[in-house]
Length: 485
Image 1 (spheres, one colour):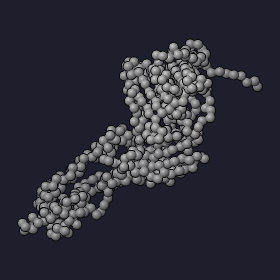
Image 2 (tube, rainbow, N blue to C red):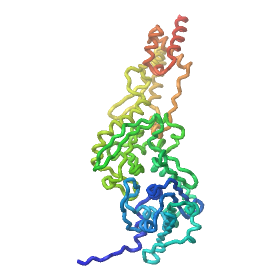
Image 3 (cartoon, rainbow, N blue to C red):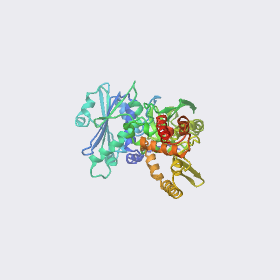
Image 4 (cartoon, rainbow, N blue to C red):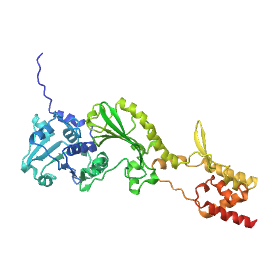
């Protein structure tokens, strides 16, 4: 048996463009390289006028001429990676860039030496050879961000041109690219939020002149956020750190927080595990079959920190946008997940009406095999005190009215608003309305004529059970009733 070399055809460049990168994932992959190169400042500049280019500049350590060529080699080796390296397969720079553009230019500087290389798909196809263009200084002076790069001691500039797959067939490429940058901002603010917020070794990312602010999915700085004690699990010879967060009820969010999509209409889809690899968000919005996505668990998010040594075990994909936990992790996590989910459910239980036999509610919850509903509690002292003063015909008409109100309550509309985290408005009864209700109750003879005893009785009746000045109101109404008698 004689071995022989079979080189790939140049059309491989076209084929590898279909890996499935989104623009957000492609840009994030390049920022991974910048962070690995110990960059502190990253600048993203896109042509939002004509849609001709997108450039990313960092102030990292840069690359030597040999390293730059290896970085552009299609079968480049992964090499020895540090445990903190955000890279994975050594393919990100090529596959991410060419998934969006036909022309990739890499300019890098280390120890004062500048290396400028370019993969041009059309040039390679026309030549029929794997030819990498080597640029000189005259080719670089008019490139975007060149002046900023030239002023740095070290760093790397990546430039995408001929944005065919990114722009598509739009007739307004500049406006289209500007719109897509909005999604890039949102995605990067979440994916790199721990780097952007790091007080000791913070990085900055500027997108078309606007600094990027971190989006913390756990609202760690909100005092109403509840968090569990971190748990460390031994999985596959590595340590996986797990910490649960229960977000505040929407009524406890700040006005700025309420503007975030993942805290508004998108909160239900944002629950679940948030898997990080070396502090970089890989995957989120999944329960991996350990729980269901529902309204009562939508406040719950679980941070999972996975070391890079477990990449293969977690089936990390080439785009670093998906990870599937191993079965051993799922088995261990089942023991931890229920208490975390229960805490999230209690956020709604405290806001909703809990079953409490000590309180005479105005509404009664009905549950059958077919579902649930609500009806007005005709035994509530508030209702009974009114009905007792009516003759039979009027009382029956009022009961019919209350039943109609209950049967036409817009339950689904309330559900839609609640699911969208729209704060509910519950107006408090006006003072005069409460006094009128208390007078009806006093006249009905349902409660003691002793005001002190009546206060104790009314403490178990809606809506008086939550009134702060109940003593004062009862004293006033009971004294007026005694005087009238």
